[in-house]
Length: 176
Image (cartoon, rainbow, N blue to C red):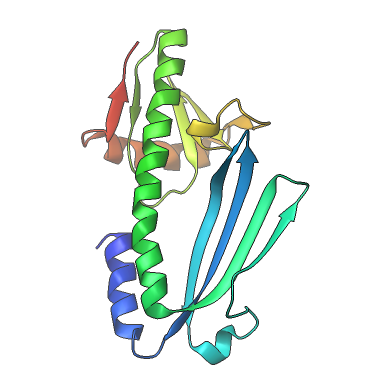
């Protein structure tokens, strides 16, 4: 069962109990466009979520970071969560463009795999493994960390996950 299937099964079981949700969004102003950095929905009973207002509360920090939060009904949360899938598709499209630029500049092919058990991004070049601290579509736009993994046990564990994953077809591949 995938993480999404497990979430949907749990959500279905809790639907009668969890009547409300909190919505949190953090966005950053890049040029003239607000870019979503983080969105979360936390489902619960209304009484457990009273610390979050029932209206859209927002604050802008340093003229470039927007934080929005609200307590909303479950049907509204479900509708907004489904709409987020299109945001994921937009992020994947932006990642493809960035990866294509990198592949062309470095004259390499880059394959992307979805690994449900990992949130972070990793780069495997030969036998060297790197942890990348930012999304690939934001690479080079701000300060980011790229750290080589040298602990042999941790590296072996990650390589095992990669071996099982790369036995399947990639989500997409870009070539120079």
